[in-house]
Length: 146
Image (tube, rainbow, N blue to C red; front, side, top):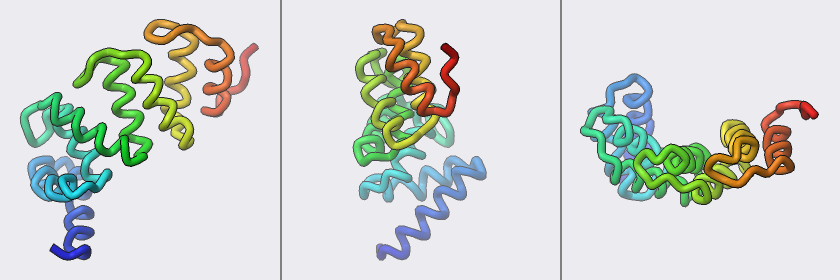
């Protein structure tokens, strides 16, 4: 397949995903994900994680989310952080969750910045740290409440 075919299939796969035609999205995006495209990998992870167009498969969800995250995709980094925070498709691990949320937060993803602020405020899966909590909440656009 040519690069143009890959781009068209990626666009068609993303369109199918957004239109909730998940079986078609899976068909179009799988070969592109296999070739290393993080956009395709992220969407496959979401479909496997939630059983959309396929049977729920935690191992496949984690594999694809991690593949996209390791390529620097902030949404995938947030997604894998969430997997580790919740223990969904991955073992619950506060350190790993914070590692991935931090990578996404450093790219400006407000959801990860907010999540880090809350995690450091609550101190449930990671040690409380009011300075880091304040820092990440400010990065996310929340005013300092102190």
